[in-house]
Image (tube, rainbow, N blue to C red; front, top):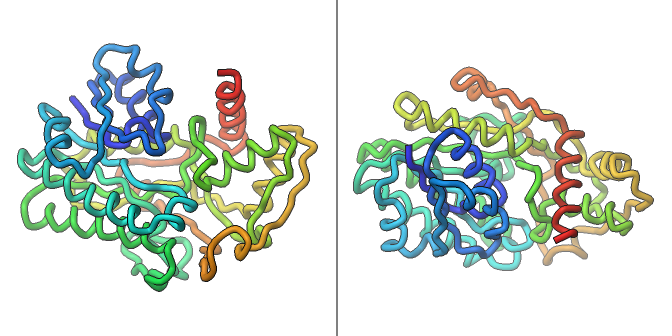
Length: 324
């Protein structure tokens, strides 16, 4: 199997490239390096069967060339990170929507299977907890920049699944819930690496709001295992949507306390109002919890890596980066 991974130099993409190579697959990683880094692919590119192409997924001809001779595509490339989304909603919409159109249209020409990576953000303001794949979605106002990401990713799902139903393109959609681990950057608002970096440097850990908002954190290793399983089962999974995440819920304040304890940091925890951290009108999602019963039944998905082990990996990754 030869696999194109868009966003292959990113956090999740680079881990997936490693896993594919470990399984004897050939990999082409396509990335514009806006948030990813070739450093993430250092080990992969040193192995046979891996190549890197720098480019934008909105470049249709480039995407078609990258996809030549590939047996499957994992579409991870996207504008991500709450800070980027809030500051640049147009670019978020353009890259995430138009870029996905280019990828799936290129795949349609030869009916190349596409694993479309979506997000828990598509559940928007839904109050049903935990969230399951058939639940309705409810966005906030288009005057609020953060909803551009959720809107674009929902469009990606509708567009890709429409091509699956009407044109026969093999498509599976995966909605990820707060994937975490080594190589993840805190520069764009990702909470776990941001708080961990503050703890390691002895700075106060900045918790937005009162810290009672909760998230569920899933190891990138568990996520890549799920994606690999789906790639091998495309024939009987096409047209399906799966939540992939860890249903164990934790408040951000408890996460900050766990990080301080795990790193033996002397850092304090400080609270920053959302109004000071983001533009006027910012809307926070207070809970986000996945129902993974469908993935459990279909692909035997079960998160196995505990948070303590994830934190140790993040700490080691941050310390390794600091030594470079």
